[in-house]
Every structure is written in C-alpha cells, then in structure tokens.
Length: 337
Image 1 (cartoon, one colour):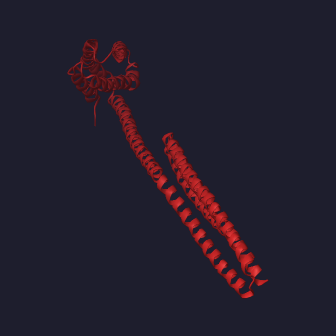
Image 2: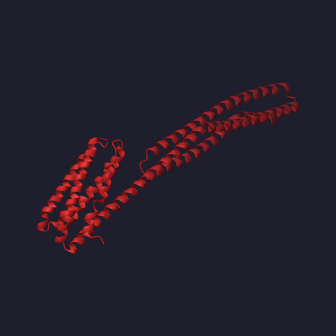
Image 3: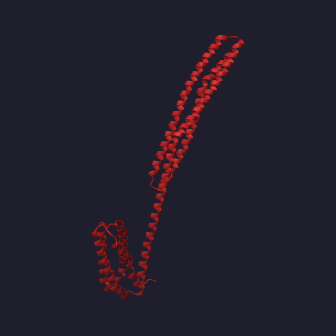
C-alpha cells in the first residue's frame, strides 16, 4: 500500500526523467524536442492537477498549512506560465533550451520545498485515514489518465489500420479499373468479330438459299419450256437481291461495331466514376457502399450489353437473309404457277 510519503517523494520521478532527456537534445533534433516537451508538459500539468484536486483541499482545512498551500499554488502557476511560453518557442532555437533549463530549476525547487516543508506538515496535520484517502484519490486519478491514454492509443492504431485498409481497397479498385480499361479494346474487338461472324454466316446462308432457288427455277423453266424470258428475269432479280443483301450486311456490321465501341466506352466511364467515388469516401460505411455500387453497376451493365448484342445479332441476320428469302418465296410461287 502506497503511503502519503511515498506518493509525494515518487511523483516527480517521471518528470525528472523527461527533463534529463530534453536537456540532452540538440537544436537539430526539433522533432524529438517537440515530442519530449509534449510528454513533459502533460506530466507536469497532471501532477499540478492531482495536487490541486485531491491534496490541497484537505490541507486548507488546517489553518497552519494554508501558507504552504498558497506557496505550492504559486509554484504551479509559475510552472504553467513557463510551459505556455515554451509551447510558443521554436524547438530548434537556443531560447528553447534556455527556457527548459529555467523550467527545470523552478520544478526542482518546488519538489525540494514539498519534501522539506510540505511533507512534514502533511504527516503532522493529517490523520492516517485522511492521508490514505488522499493517496487513493490521487492514484485513482492517475489510473483514469493512464486508461484514457491507453484507449486513445488504441483508437489511433485502429484508425491508422483502417486508413491502410481503405488505401489498399482503393488501390485494388483502381487496378481493377485499369485492367478493365486495358481489356476494353480487346472486348470491343471480340464483340465486333462476333458480330462480323454472325453477319458472314447470314450472307453465306443467303447465298446458298439464292443458289438453290436459282437451280429450282431453272429446273421448272426447263420442264415447262418457258425458257428464256423467265430465266433472264430470275437471274436479274437474284443479282439485285444479292446486291441489296451485301449493302445491308455492310451497314449492319458497321452498326454492330459502333455499338460495341460505345459499350466499351460506357463501361470504362462508369468504372472511372466508381473509383473517384471510392477516393472521396471518408468512413468505412461510405467505402463499403461505394464498392457495392461499383460491383452492382458492372453486373447490370454486363447483362444489358449481352442482351443488346444478342438483339443486334438477331436483327443483323434477319436483315441480311430477308431479301433473299423473299426472293426465294416469289420464285417458288412462280414455279408453282
């Protein structure tokens, strides 16, 4: 169990250690001075606060201790004033080192006064119960401060970890967009190739149909001996039908290629917008929402593009084969008559 004597004698240990480290730094170690001074300022303010909250109120109840309390309060005010001045002094200056030395002398004199004058008076004036109550309250106050520091440190570590994770997620999303962008031309080329194959198959089928139709018409003409006029007219109409199919095929292929390029451009722009949205996220919830939206948009766009490509392919085949199919129907009708 800590006694009031041990408490008063051991309290300055941490501050003295920080003073020694700070005095030993050079003007070139500005960041180290900044850190050590921050720790020293925090420690000195804590010591003064614990005294003023838990020790001095009890000492004021004893008339013969009021002067000692007043002197201790004056020392605390002088310490706080010097801390404020140091706070605004450049840490890489000689003035800073000089002021730190002055603050150290003031603090050490305060510690000597407490050990020589205040401690004996406290031990004489306070009962064991009063002294122990002071010790318990001071230690409880220190424990609260230590717990607050621990929680703050954990919070900083957690925030730093979250920032690292968010940065990694954004990097991965950006890499995915870059990969998508680089794959977009290949995707567009593949889609255009597919469209071209569909149109080519349509043209081939149409040509086969036209050839079969011509042969059938020729056979019918040979059988009914309606010879030259019907054969000449049939050939001319077939040529016109093939010419029409070829122009339709070219236009359809051009339309398909243009549509594929627009699909690739739209996907790239949506992914780029998604990465910009990720970069603007300020909380984990916003980041998760933006990621989900990006994935959902990509899925919806993939389904929409697939349906659109299927529709265009079917339309292309229909446009290519329709003229010759109509021609075949007319030729069959003439043959039947």
